Length: 114
Image 1 (tube, helix red, strand yellow):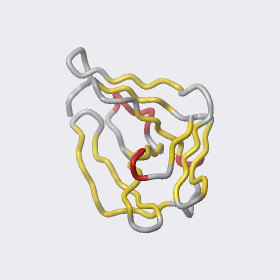
Image 2 (cartoon, rainbow, N blue to C red):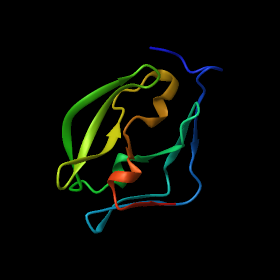
Image 3 (cartoon, helix red, strand yellow):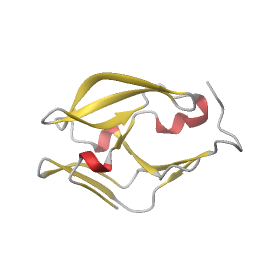
Image 4 (cartoon, one colour):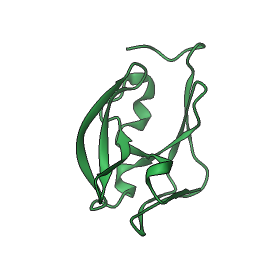
């Protein structure tokens, strides 16, 4: 585990407004409680509470990856088998706020509206 710091800053703040994610012709997630994670020089990522994602919209994918700053990522498919979302089920303490939140790949869903 690596701690975020000056060389690799990570900030998590509430996103102002509503986030809507569309996939397969429908809204699969909608939330006014999303968190915005900014990490080093990467584009910001919106994390949506799991409760604000349609339960039938995603299926667990067996893929797992490890981030030295956030922990183990789990992946989720939308219908059609595309790994379109990820989550840190047990993130490291420095980013614990994203627990039970999902993030979506913008290029693997029809749209992420903010």
